[in-house]
Structures are given as C-alpha cells and as structure tokens.
Image: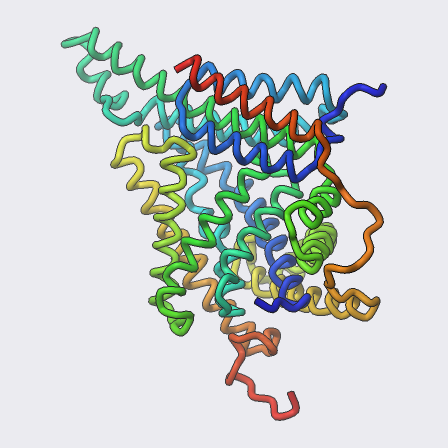
Length: 196
Length: 249
C-alpha cells in the first residue's frame, strides 16, 4: 500500500485531536461516573464516550476509503495515546487493533464501495460488539451479569452510532463540500476542478 | 548512580513484553498474582527508575478511579449471583446463602479490579520510563515501522500544545458570537478538523520541502539496539507470571 506523508500526517493529527476531545469528554463524564457509582454502575459512565474513542479509525476510513485505513489509523491513534501517557501503556495498541478491525470489517465486506449511513451504522454496531468481546476476555467482563453487559453494549452502540455514523458522516461530507478534503477519495467527483 | 534502570531497556522489547504480559494476565483470575504484578510494577518504578512522583500520581489516579468503578461493577453485578438489592430482600430468610453470594461477588470484584490494576501497573511502568521519541525510533529499527509513519507520529504529537490553544480559541470565538459550543459540539469539532487537516497539509509540505522522503535508507542520529539484558528482563517478567499462574492456581 502506498501511503503519502500527507495521509499519514492527516491521520496522526486527527488522532491527536480526537484524543484531546476524548480526554475533555471523559473529564466532563466524571459526573456520570459519580452519579452511577452508588448503584454500582460507575463503569457505565465511560460508555457514552466510546464513540469518540472509535472516531480516529472511522473518520480516516470514511475520508480515505482505502483498505487497511481504519486499522492502521486506530493503531496509530493507540501509539499516540501511549506516547501521551495513557495508564494502559502499550496495551491499548491491542484494543486499537480490535476497534479498527471491528469498524472496517463491515466496510470491507461491502468491498469498500458502500459509504451510506446504513453501512456506517452497521460498522458502528459491529465495532461496539467486537470491543465488548475484547472486554469480555481482557477486562474480565464475562464475570459480569448478562443484563448489565447488554445495557453497557446498548449505550456503547448508541454512542458509536451517534459519533461514528452520524457525526462522522455529517462532518466528513461538510468538510469535503467545503473543499478541505480535496485530494482524498471522499471528494472524488464532488468538486471536480478541471485544473486539479 | 550507575544502577540498573528500566529507562535503559529497549522500548520495543519493553512494549512487547507488556503486551504479552497483558495477554497472559487475561487468561487467569488469580487476585494474588494480579496484586503481585501491580506491586512489582510499583517497586520497579520506585527502585529502578527515575520516574517523578508527580507524574506517577497524575497517571495513577485515573487508573485507580477506573479500578474502583469495575470493583463496584463486580460487587453489584457479578454473574451467577443475586444482586445486592435482591440479596438484601431475602436477608431474613436465608442469611448464609446471602453471605455466600456476597462473598462470591466480593471475590469477583477483587478479581476484576486487581486485574485492571495489574494492567495499569505495567502500563504506567512503561509510560513513565519510556521516552516517546526513543519508543518511535525503536519501532522503526526493531519493528519495521516506516519512517513516514514514525515522523508523522512525532510531528502530530508535538502539535498537541498548539491544538489545545486552538481549541480554546475556537470555543472563545463561538462564545464571542453568542453561540453555545462545548468541546463535544459538532461545530467545534468541524472547525478543529478544518484546522487539523490544514496543519497536516502544511506539515507534509514543510517536511518534504526540507528533504524528507520517508525513505527507509535514510541516516539516523541514534539507532536503538536490543541487548541481552532486554531479553533477560522480558524473560524474567513473563516467566514470573507464567510461574505464578501455575503455582497459584
């Protein structure tokens, strides 16, 4: 696969941006944690933000539309998070891989040809399920009662659909229309510039 | 002092060791072993590293909060047991069963939270003893990461302070126009993405105009190497965990 420096930088800079926004969101989400703690659901407080967590891969894939972009972007984002001092250290590279794989799987099954909202919603759901399976094994969630897990999954899916399907598509399309993404696959045929 | 320091270990070997350790940890639920891994990480940080206590606390508190969250989750909603509310309801009828269920939940809660702490101990040990640029350089030399990705990551990470400033400016600009926009609002996200994409284009242009080609055959100021003690430390840690898994089962 031929990666241009520009593409790599775009993914990396956006990964840092999503990292910053995610951090801001989790601070704001401390409130959820506190409210839910007395009923034992503190961990559920993290779930509404999972969609932002997946955004690095989802956005890069939606813009560039090349095989492997989602996975590579998530791994890149995870390496960056490791550098910024995440307490899981390099372990998040593993979860990055699962996230990228989860989102890209649906897109890949459609041969990177379908980019409508339904496909993105399916990808968001697939990504949520895959990451919960990762949690079942790695975080030991298979020791938790099934109804609680389903509740967590439901919140995670809603969050993923909001951020990685709706916001991702809306922002991506608007950026393309504004001409910011000229040169990327998303803009092909959109602003045909004869001089380009 | 010329004592052994974790900082001197090869970052890639260290990262792979931590990853493999995490995978091993995910196969067991031995509270004692998880606690031991966590305590060992703290001791290594204390005696064999130059980690600053202030940085440790800043990174440890979120881990502790997450561990407490999952402790509560296990305590209240462990599988195969009555939840707390139910058990309180039947308290008068069958106190022994309730106590057994509570004990079971407590042990699940400890299993889950100590497991998270074991991950966090290893992760923090890595984060506090690894220089970012050395890690990336090591990924190039030991793991075959392309220089294009390596320098891309370094450039993007160094852009973060500017990005935080810009985020403040963007939010202020919306506020000045009387538009309510928090960090999570799509308006802010959109503006920040426009800036980020522009930055990435300028950065690429700047790097390429200074002669960066992303070619593998470039010269390097420093080349990280794997030495015998990297492998030895890795083997000791992983061997210790495997031994713990067998002996403490």
